[in-house]
Length: 103
Figure 1 (tube, rainbow, N blue to C red):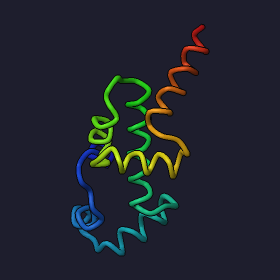
Figure 2 (cartoon, helix red, strand yellow):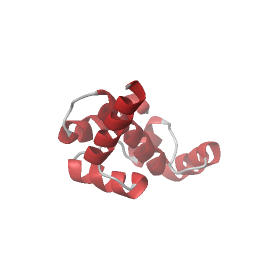
Figure 3 (cartoon, rainbow, N blue to C red):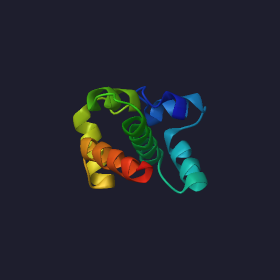
Figure 4 (tube, helix red, strand yellow):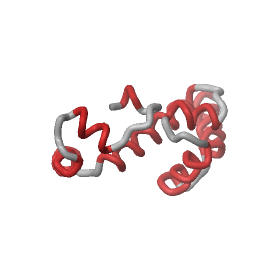
């Protein structure tokens, strides 16, 4: 799934690919990972967005699309909820901490 983060993934699509019902997929996924498929997907997308913010000069709009959030507004909402910051502030903070470590 991680190689398809930028694609619109739904539970129904994933369940069909796994040849099981959405309920069975959700139950088995949670038993194996301790989280729901949606929460896992959001966390993976956030991880990808953070990597891109740390390692590229892509705009927040481009990163939102590349990480599969669909829009920068949705990316910002998830960043605020999970990381208590904005993507731009995260990038600035990460850049400063990298400069401090190098200098």
